[in-house]
Each structure stands twice: as C-alpha cells, then as structure tokens.
Image 1 (cartoon, rainbow, N blue to C red):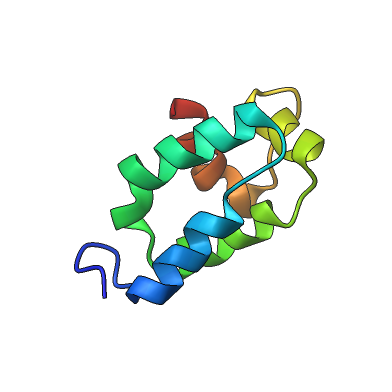
Image 2: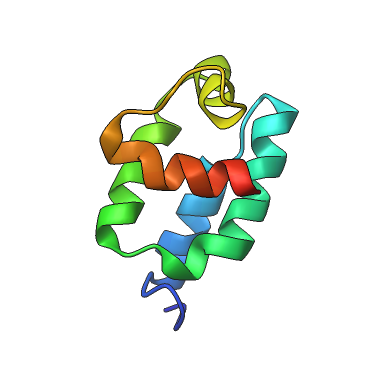
Length: 84
C-alpha cells in the first residue's frame, strides 16, 4: 500500500498505467499530476479522475488546456491537471 494515497501498490500501478496516453501532452500532464496530487486522491477524487481518463485524448486535452469547461463534479481534478 502507498501510505500517502491509501491505494495498494497494485492499484497504484494500474492507475499509473491507465494514465499513459497516446497524446504526449496528456501523458506529461498526467505523470506530473500523479507525482504532485497522487497523495491527495481520496476515493471520490479517484473516481472523478477515472471518469476523466475514460475520455479520448483530444477531449481530455481540451479540458486540460481550457478549451472547454469541465462539469462541476470534475472541476477540482481538472483544476489540478491545469496546474501541472
């Protein structure tokens, strides 16, 4: 278990793998996001992140770079992504 995030080591590896993207910009932002904000991912935030990871690369990048506004439930995570 990762003592900072509460995720098991296997769950952490899966999350890191799921954050790997085909679009380099997303890949870089998500990698930094996990380093900076990974310890702050409680179950609710983790669920919102997983929802965002279901988006296609272009839709996710549009959210991250501010081309479109996130839904209210994703605003915190998208804000964190934008800060990375």
